[in-house]
Every structure is written in structure tokens, then in C-alpha cells.
Image (cartoon, rainbow, N blue to C red; front, side):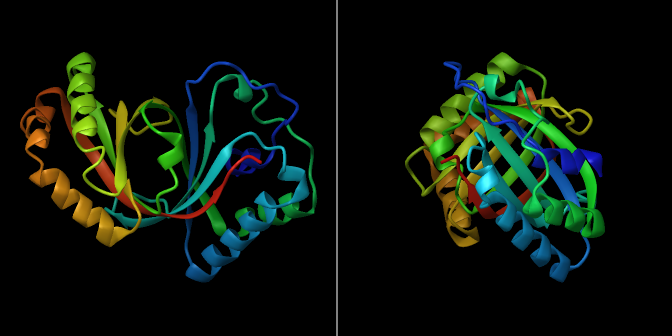
Length: 235
């Protein structure tokens, strides 16, 4: 349980750095019952809106799995987006316990099972578009990073305006499943608009180099879809 509980302690007396390379920390956990999931979401919402959290420098996403195969054994993610490495110098230190943090920790201990935690960094990413509700995540094994990066960049650029959504590329750093080097994410407002966006991407002639050549440089290891339940942004 320690890996989950540590995410609720931070230190806030840090200075913003001029660095602009962002980092993700995602904690994956499983909740068995829907009623327990609802209780957990409500408790996290209380925590994130508490006065003690007002100086938190990260954007936080609470996510629920929507579609997954039998090997995806988590039901939720709690992800922290840091705008730079400087803010992570004191990761794991914080203002101490308070009423809301104690409540959330108790609920996590009672209803949540930690599954994994992943550290990653965006490669092609617009933080202003990370709040879309529906996302699909592909875990990739990239064998030829330079050629893959060029192909992915061209593909993402070719589809930057033809649907209401965004396509991203992220680098896996630590905690990823065996063989995974990168994540590709496609986001939109909801499942219906995501599917319409998918159709638009497939119909785009400028997408065809990606579909013809991506498998030369990479392979897909797994995928899942998720719905963003809550987003908490720094004040």
C-alpha cells in the first residue's frame, strides 16, 4: 500500500524551473466493486480540493478503465503531470497528514489494490489538450527510435486538425511492462467522437505512410481505453 499512499504527500515550497520537459507519474490500482470506486472517487475529490492541497504544483488526473483485455488488471489510474524535473526534487515529502488525506488513505487501504506505477515523459504532447475525457493508450516496443520518431511526428502533424482530439507520443522511463519503450495516446471528448476521429485519421491520405511503415520500426504490446473522471490543475 505504501506506493499508493506516498502520492498523497508533497512539498510545496519549490521554485518553478525554466526547464520545460514534463514528466508523468501514474499509479495503477484495482477496485473490485463499483460502490467502492464511487466512494474512492468522492474521497479523492475531497482531498484534491482541500486547502492543504492548494499549493500542489502538479496537474492530477483520476482515470477509470473503459476497455481492456484480460491482462490489464487495474481499474483506475491516478496520474500526476509535472511540468519539469525541478518540481520532483522533493517528491514524497509534504505538509503532513490532515483530515482529508487520512480519509483517502484509509479508503485506499480498504478498497484499492496497487497494481503498478509508471514514470514516463512526453515526447509529442500539448498539456493544454490533456483534459479530453476519452483516451486510448497503446504500449509500444520501438526498435528504431529515430525512424519511428520521424514517422510518428509526421503522422501526428498530419492529423492535428482533422478531428476534435489529439494524438500524443510518450517515452517510458520506469515501471513499464516488459518490452515497452513508448506509449501512443489518442484523446477526444467521448467514445463517439473518438471513433469518428479514428475514421477521419484512417481516411486521411497523409496517414498512410504511418499505417504502411510503423510496423517496420515498432510493435504494439497492449492497449486499453479509459475515461477521465477528474482533472485537478494547479491554482
